[in-house]
Image (tube, one colour):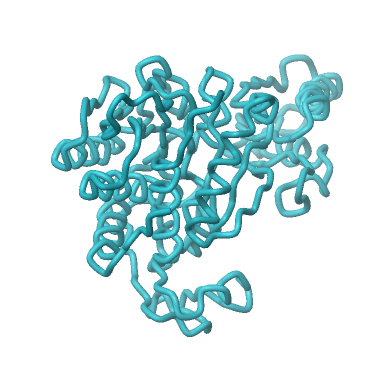
Length: 420
């Protein structure tokens, strides 16, 4: 097994690339029907596209929907290795502000609290986030407390691009053809919707979109999104007796109809939930948005049915048409797509061990592009990218974990992947 020499020059390449990415505003929008869902995503898509061209990758393409495809050519004579791919998404979550990201670098972290913003006193607390303790002595990259960071999933993008650059710079590392893909709109459940699996041309792929070092996942939630609209009647409050129907009050009542112990903050492991993600209301109209999640397919169907039943109950109480619901499927548990294909997982696990990373095979309490791609004919488990505390101002990533992810990508690329 060849040793991957990842010296200071390469560490700085990785760090600077990631910093450049997170500074580019690229939040997606679930309300938009376009692809990408926001114009700002084109800024980072074009940036990555031009970067891949400058590095010398083959067949670099940015299509009309913002999907990026590129290839590292094989350097094996008479190559009969399967084409393997790596995928990440460049959009960031609409759950928190992603504009004006000002990343901060903390060398040789001492294990204590990090004052992210002197003006506001915003602090990343090691007592509140005990996971920080495992990064003592490492280089941390954080927010300034006013935005998310975007390690989900710009860490994955930076790792894949850096690994590609490394492979091109080290022709002595023998590998087959490697496919690379970057997608918009993963954070709103549409990242794989217009991904061209046939054009990508890989036999299987890996999304670099997990969290802490060692994560390797091929099970995920079944997922759907639900939008509930409640119609009220606005009347001057001085003359409202017997007439006004306050949609905001009805929305509050509707929300209370769901189990309080089945939310993201009260569930773990394989337990599913209803997650209230957004509420906009006034007297005349309310719009409630949920995401519905469960690993078990039957329980997932039951959750969707319960949402519909609660709307029916609401209309029976307040009149037909008071509430309406639209449920859209987002992705399914990809576990069954790996039956008879566990060599895909085994290759990744061995690549981690060769990088001195202990594999942690677990189920995702979320989803990635890989879940949808697996049902589109491209088996695609998920590998760690290093980010922690996604989708908020406490988000951070350790440079050393990103470095390990790059090594895992290179190890997979050079692994003997042909199967009988």
